[in-house]
Structure formats: C-alpha cells, structure tokens
Length: 64
Ligand SMILES: [Zn+2]
Image 1 (cartoon, rainbow, N blue to C red):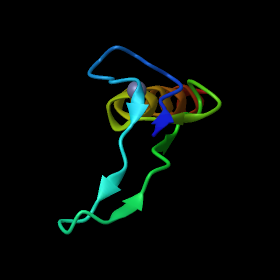
Image 2 (image 1 turned 60 degrees about the vertical axis):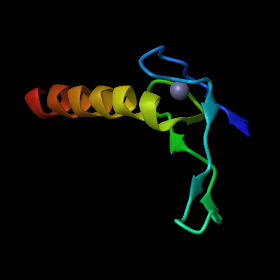
Image 3 (image 1 turned 180 degrees about the horizontal axis):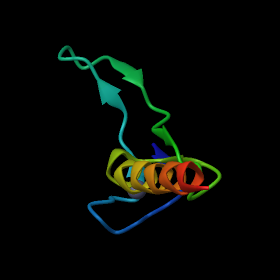
C-alpha cells in the first residue's frame, strides 16, 4: 500500500487505501494529487484538505 504524503490527521490513516469494485478488484491505488499542499500522492481524507486549499487559491487569484 502506498503511503499518504500529507498526513493531515483529519481522518488520515497514513496510507492510501486502494479503491476496489464490489467484487474486490482493485481499480485505483494511486490516491489523489496533493498539489498545492504536497508534491506527492494523498489519501481520500487528506484530499479534502487539498481541495480546500485549491479552492482558496482560486478565490485568491480571482480577487487579484
Ligand atoms: Zn492522508
């Protein structure tokens, strides 16, 4: 299992859990892009924080 590279602590288990179909077949195990918080892959829990950071970045550039 890949390690989460952000580890926010907000529900993060420090690992990127592979996504599986109902039949138990792994179809995605690379987590999410951690940009702009971290240069790496992050878990679903940390991705929430990444998305928040992206949104506030957008708001900032929209205000300029
Ligand atoms: Zn995480």
